[in-house]
Image 1 (spheres, one colour):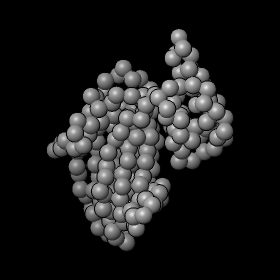
Image 2 (image 1 turned 30 degrees about the vertical axis):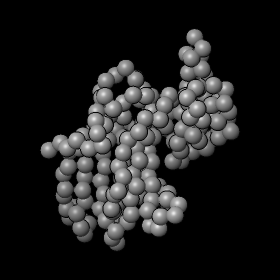
Image 3 (image 1 turned 180 degrees about the vertical axis):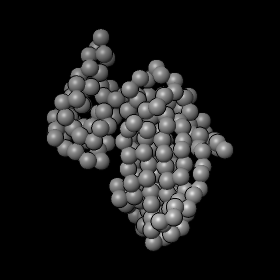
Image 4 (image 1 turned 45 degrees about the vertical axis):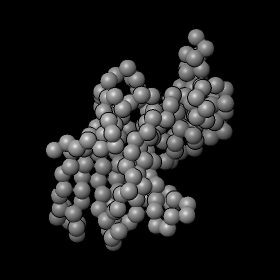
Length: 182
């Protein structure tokens, strides 16, 4: 059964199951971002959660894209026990109304209380400093983080959301600069 959550942005297919090797149930959700919810080149999945049991599981994977787990969560300042998990994905073809890259995701949890699960538009894929324009400042973000790897966000210079800041990210920014000027 599909449920509409977060306004027009999400559809869920919920399937609860009990893996034989694990104590307690795991909730598994396959989801899709509504086509009219994708307005920009990049979207960010945000999950705010608190661990509630001894065997917490939290996995979020964008189909053919980045993923994150409970260990990637960051404490929310001033809110004891609450964590924030973010996954940013780049749409390769903005004109594509629905497709297998950002549109589909998989999510599972166990022993986790979730208070926020949302997807937000975060702008053009080359706009790394998030000022609304792709410019030389965005190229500086790539240069200052060149060689970094791990759970990176666009703000860290990872323009293509592949987990590493490299020449491919610089190429994206340069292409977008040329497209804005052209």
